[in-house]
Length: 354
Image 1: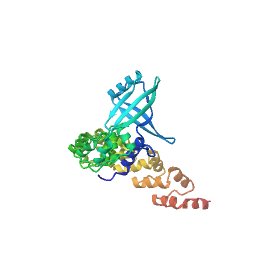
Image 2: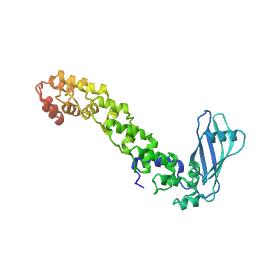
Image 3: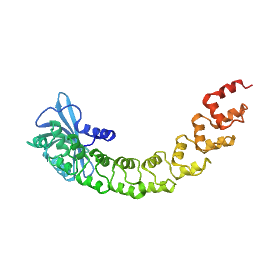
Image 4: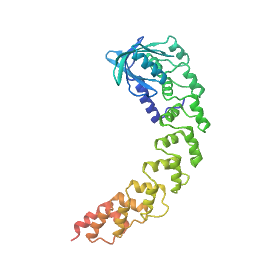
């Protein structure tokens, strides 16, 4: 399996930290602890918060998702005062209610590992701790899940990979859908990132159809993060950004370069057919109509984008130029203004002026 990328690996690590918590769960059968859940709406899936007792004043927190039918059975059993058993391949979770308040229920749970589960997983190359077996039950990681990953092309995986792929539902069908869209041989973490950010095969096909070519996984994730939609791509082209790449489009989103921004930049009189880089630079350095017109009124209109940006960076502002004029320095050109400002000579000249 390919090396885990830093950003994606960090995101997955944070998720798995929520599954495992800190420390090591000592061997104990069954695992026992307390649970709680908020109630009050009719959503189809519920997450039960669980805290396993590790002894020595330590605990381990995790959560358990129930689908609609499981949630219905859970509610019925709790409201009737019975226990609720959830049988998973890794073992059985048993819930008992203590208090059923209007919006919050809580109680106790126990987990009994299935005899043979750990050995079956070990034979497939996954040596699991007690805590990992417990996590496998909460995530519904069965002994068939490694086979599902193998069919998708992932054979060199570890327990963390099993859990992250299960959490984000990276199935063989999901992987094959991207292969059909022209994206193949990606590592498992990239597919997890696709799930996290909502990247779909349709996005890859739409991007190719709109002239962005065959994009890699990073490009597609960036498109989702910055909401690069087909409509936005067409708008960029209408603004004169021909065959834009993803980096161009991301920059347009970050710096809010839209039709108004392009028209405002062109109205500065710093040249025609400004490039995307030039418009972005003007926005970064806050070179606006007030700044340029102020200099123009004083006879020092910037000749182009580079000069306007240099004026802004070095503090050649209308107020500063006006002060020089009041001191009698009215015939300076652009280079002289910049040298005076950069080297601080203006302060010396003002001191020597009668």
